[in-house]
Image (tube, rainbow, N blue to C red; front, side):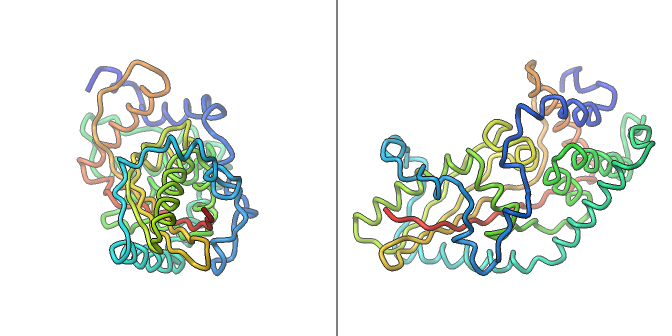
Length: 304
């Protein structure tokens, strides 16, 4: 690790500096307005204006340029198996009451943190060169609250969830505000266009079931800062079924929340983000941060 990782309070520095460049990184995809939430019984027709509803996936030139060589495409029974799995897991996500309660509690703590007149004074990291598991957790709990204060509630909640010995997965069902927000990102558009192309091909071949999987790396530019800090290179698994001439598309986006030590680049803000990441890797090695999976489900209608 290079010497820049020895900066005083690197995670705090990252949290504060992130606020400076956040206006350039965040877009509407980080808005979790109540207007984005819909009834769980009708997630496919939720009216969210994403790539599937604004006509982007019907852009023939974009579909022509889409590269399907990086996708594992399956048909018939194999696709039906994937479809059944995604549907079942989405239903389970709808029932994640404990997770919803934990997130609500976290947001309450963020509000209390924001209202504390001594909030900045509280952000003092342990001075020991080798921190204990408890010290790391205390430090990173404050980082999570800080991220929530800087309009990164997903990143804050994702970090908070890792600060326990056996964290459960974070599951976001289709139609939830988090799912809808993800569907507004350009990263989601990036995967949606080749999915539409694969469905076109299946439809032309007379198939009624098709599925595929690939991956896409997130960035502050293509996902917004909140999603970028919570998700890394996500895996996308999807399946579609033909119903009455149109297709119902079920998409599962997931990633393992963990930290791996990286070489610190010279460019801002990547250097600050990497320094923060490397502190997270140290905390993970100490057992303070425990890896787990984040799952986001989305559902769309599509007519070739």
